[in-house]
Image (cartoon, rainbow, N blue to C red; front, side, top):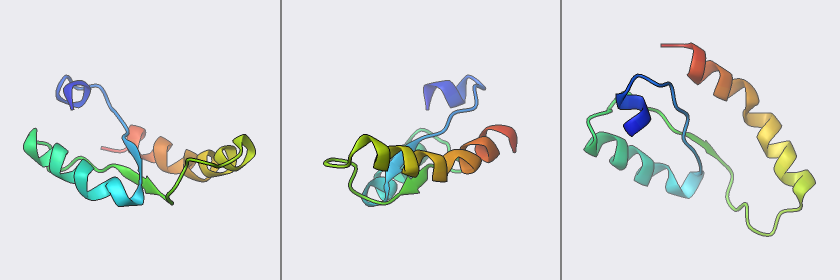
Amino acid sequence: MTLENRGIPTVVLCTDPFLNSAFRHANTFGRRDFRPLGFPHPLGGLKPEQVAVRASELEQAVIDVLTTY
């Protein structure tokens, strides 16, 4: 939130079970418009190749968040 409040576009990535926490955190810091990106849980135990697939699936969404206001 500190970076966002300084005008630096930021993306928060978290697994789906943590989205509610991310929204609450953003609201607490006055960023009701802030939208974290969720992806399937868990990450623990995944092989690097599986993590790379998840990252590639989020790539366009991250670009969209950083370039659309």
